[in-house]
Length: 518
Image (cartoon, rainbow, N blue to C red; front, side, top):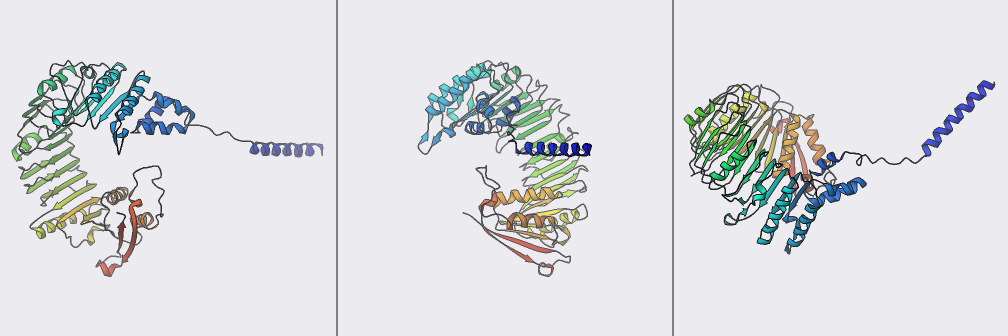
């Protein structure tokens, strides 16, 4: 009996201890403050405005002090203005104060939308200060007229720490000395830069991996053969570019976009490892294309855009995965034999595509805009669509005249109409949902129609998202830009049965009619 009594007392004591522990107040754990400082800096780097960086400091006590040591500085003159204009004094003080407080800087970005002489003088000082504080990434964006480009100071071109230099709206002193031996990324946009300046960069920056020249003037002749680590090269509508000679075994991606009536001779040799090629060249014809294409046996992505001299196209490549042919207005025939092709995009006024292999495709985008021979073009398009019927579970999204129609069964498509059609063939159900979501956000259509079975998962998704929405959706509470759900004023839904839409299967058409807020 004594032993039983002691056991009962022991159990009562244990229960009392548990009750006391439940009544204790548990202090909340601040896990955000426990994050390492580099990770916090990485999180802060995704915020565009310094004001937002300061706001998130309320998340924890540690963040209130750590944001002042944030190594990424991004200042935009537009953030210091109101209806009365821009407040240059506040802008100057904000930049100077943050720069002075920093011992070292990872990235320094400065953007001017209304540059004046005073701001340009301060810009020179800020760039010099950032270089002295061992900045690794420097980005300068100056919106100026062509005759009033910002003259980059010599200090911005001499640093052994700088790895990335992005310039917009700048010009250069022809006698400048460049010392950027560790530079890996160079981007020059909407700037005045001649061949001598580019040559100086190439000779002084042997480690460049990414080179981009966009809307630049007065380059003339461009020769690239000594950048042995160059992986990505982009030349986009550079006025005055006469010739381009490229030789680089390391080159993986090359984008060249010319423009009528400019004539430029492009010569690319020794680029056996090229995998991504984009050409917008008004002088490219069948012969020139074949000469180029056979040189790149490892090509995985090819984009041909506005190559208007191209009439016939033949592609034989076992490694090609993505192909885009955009607005090549004289193209009448395109024979494509690419067994590993997974993504296809075509835009034009004809239907010239002949595909040997379809089984490997996962996505196909077709934008047809025609002025004549509409019946023939639509018949050819339907013939192409029928080839997809027996090659996987495809979904067809058709956009025309502010109306979107989704077909879940390709066999039931009898006809297509309209002189402009945007067609998307997608296999992945998740991609269909994402694509439709993006269409609703971008185009705000009058109607969205779905031809499907009544048990369709996509139908259930659309009903739940559209018809079950709240009057004041809370999905975008913390975002200034709201999603399309917030723009709906009213929406109605109608369902038509099999007989009404003329299908042989147990399909129905569900139509959502939108009234959008103005």
